[in-house]
Length: 168
Image (tube, rainbow, N blue to C red; front, side, top):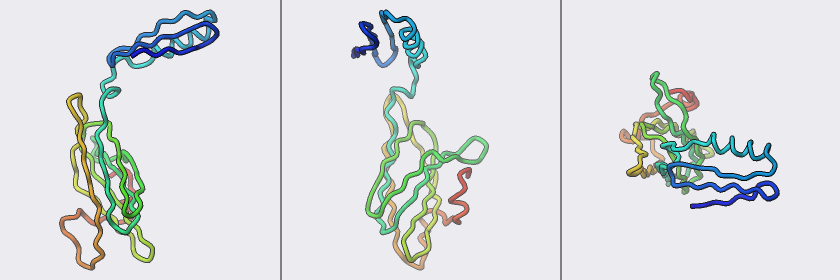
């Protein structure tokens, strides 16, 4: 793949990329912009592993009548966790979250509907793979049945303060 860029006056820069290296050849009449551009291209990563990998896909489907706020959490080495991504999903809708790193993740959800108490849940951990030989494609479906009886298979009930805590 070759890309030609018109810079200043008669100068040109040609970038060749073979998904492994990037080279820059230029002839510049005005040396200051040419040097700045050359420094910019030299500072680009030449073979970053994540630069060429397709991200994993986490599709979140909301089949409930509630508005969902979903936090994708990534556990940290110190025993806590950090928010990888937060998405808002309308009722009867879906969103896809792209995940760039292999690892374990879990979800925290808040389901809101006017006239009812919000429902907070913390899901079980799941593993995501991103590699040169493939990537994970995951689908999570949220279905809330309004009932007084708890569903023991749908994750653990959490408090509003635990949902708001972004470190665990």
